[in-house]
Length: 317
Image 1 (tube, rainbow, N blue to C red):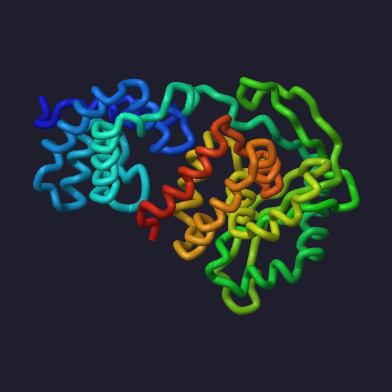
Image 2: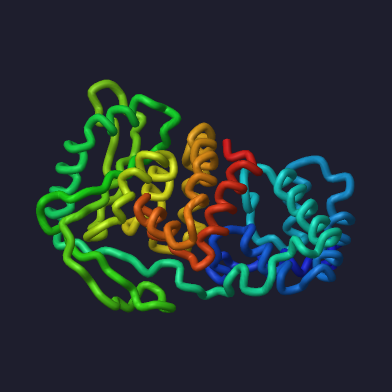
């Protein structure tokens, strides 16, 4: 028997193999369990948290406490500090106990499994993708140059456009199913290319291709202006949640991006999120699509809001 009784919120949210609790973020998993158990479960978890964390001041000891409370992760769920994450968790439990209206209503966070990706792509050939890279990097050479000259512009750059030849198909997956059933495919001459910044020596390439895929055959009339207005989000969402990279649950892509990107760039991303969320519920999905993002959870607005919160609340350096 351990010194720390089981924490039901953490047990159901974060104690299992992450493949079995697929979600867009640890915050989503915590909020889902608070909704399921209400203020009573939050109070029981808060009592256990207070007893378990009392007097704990080091990262190593706090990691041990987290494991005793049934978090099955070696690294913190968010950021780089167990002390910081556990402090937030205690704050959230106390908030839920003192003000139960902060607990989300049933349905506010959908139950897994939910359809988080219904768009995909299929290329004609490797040659068609190489053609897309040549065309788009030449057309956007000034944008590529400016990106390379700004160290805080992020590790990835997302480019999109018509390349004058068929690239492949824009695919629609069958609703409510995973990635194995294709509902329809439309031929397209549009492509998306993602460049990855390299730490290059003199005379070496400054970037490599991280991803390339067939794009949507058409886009919203405001798509180009949205990308111009929200360059950091375009690089972040299009760079990490594009059709070629998004193979597993979106939490994997989000965590990879947060760990890889410089803090100054993540600050730019978080600063742009409120401008993106200012769109109406009808316009928001079109804007997210225009930025190159293929993650489309049904709670899209909440997911994006939690992304900004996650960046600002924790240290990702």
